[in-house]
Structures are given as structure tokens and as C-alpha cells.
Image 1 (cartoon, rainbow, N blue to C red):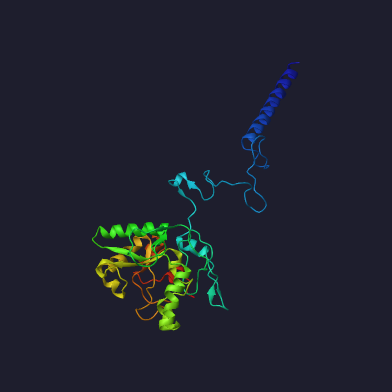
Image 2: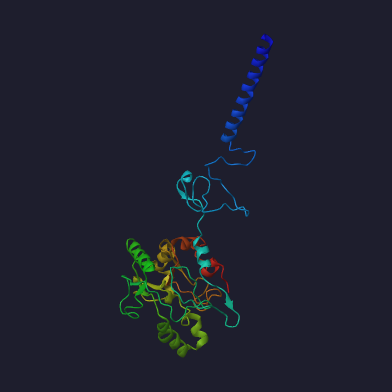
Length: 307
């Protein structure tokens, strides 16, 4: 009898140990999410991955950040590097040249692409006309057509006015002679008269065909200085006003456009003679990048469009 009780007690102890082990194993399995079997505890959503390897749904990157969003651990900065102005400009314009015509497709739609390329091979359509132009405060009176050539697109007008005021603070006085020119203005008042007087070959050296002038964008202008009574002159670049413009215009988003030409011969890339008075708005970041090349880089070279 005593021997039976001893045996029964031993078996009961073993049973208790086995039962405890089973309970402990179950608890550990739940805590670990049954990782060995790949099962997920009931009530906990699975972090599923589709066969392609792409997380399903509107994924969030580690750290709780939306793709391309700000990272609190990185000072709130953007985690995806934004496109540069140059990359943005290249992605928003078709630069393909048609072998039959030697021209890219005409640009018809006006948008906020302030870096669009316009030259002899990349023209604007006759219908192209910005709808956000404003009258520039600092213009030479009696030049061009009031309500047209005294205007620029708003972003360029504000930048130029800031530049004029910054120059005046250093006793440098500059004004805009002409800004926006319509297709018709370029054709009837500039190009056709030049062809009639000089012949087409000579006219093409210094005067844009209608549709091929940056002035039609509303982002380009001709600037004159007080020392020359605000007239256009090839010597403008040697005046104190011209030197100031060359040194500082990038700070306001402008570049001197036709730097590969001379006074008599057009540049191979820009297609025009050098005009120290002709500046073009492309934005501060891009203009500053170009200025770092010493003022010798053409806009075509900057964009990599050399046709």
C-alpha cells in the first residue's frame, strides 16, 4: 500500500511537469508568433508581401514615413532627392528634331516650365502666348508697343524689378527696353524688315524668325544702361551697367543668352550674334549653376541639347 502511494505520487509529479511544459510551450509560441511554423497569432494583421516582392497596399517605409515623405529622424528633410531644375526641364519638353524639317515640334501650350529651350531649331507656335504677363515697372518709354513689349511673365517681371532695385542701391541704373514680343510683332516689325533691308542670310545672323525668339516666351528681355541712355549697344558689355549685369544677373535667375557668338558672327550653338543686353530668366538655381562656369556656358550646353 505504501509502495502504491509512492508510485502514484511519482506519476502525479511527472504529469504536472509535462502539463506545465506544454503550457509554457504554448505561451512561448504565442509570444513569438509561432515563427517556426510561419503562423501569425490570431488578431494580429500579417505584413504580407505579394509574389512580385512588392509590399501590398499603400506601403509605408521603415520609420513610419510615406515614400518620398519627410523623415523625423533626418530633421524632417525629404527622403527622396528631388529632381534638379535641369532634369525637370529636360523631362517637360520634346527635343526630338524632325529630319525632314530640321526643327523640333512647335511648343503650343504655356505652362510653368520657365526653363524651356527656344532657339532656331526649337520654335514656339504662332498661337503661343503666356497668360500671366504683367507690366514691368522699370522700362524705357517710347520703345515698342505699350501693353505688349513692356511686359514679362510675372515671375520674370518680379525678378527683373528686384534686380533693378539691387543695382540702383549700388548706383547702377538699368531699365528694360523690350520684353515680350508676339509672333506677329517679331515677323512684321523685326524679321521681315531686316530681310528686306539686308537679305535673309544677313538678317538671320542677328534677328530671330517668328516663333524662334525667346522674347515670345515672356521670359527674355533687352536691357539698357543709363551711361548709354538706355540704348542697345554691343559696347553695353563694357559699361559699368553691363559688367554689373554680367556679374549679378544670375542672383535673380537670369543668364546672358548668346555668349558663343561675336559681334559679327552667330554662335554655332545659339545661332545668334553676341548680345550682351539680352538676358533670359531660367530661375536662380539653374542660372547660378551656369554662372559657375564663368559665363561662357551656353544654355544649349547646360541642357545638353546641341542640335
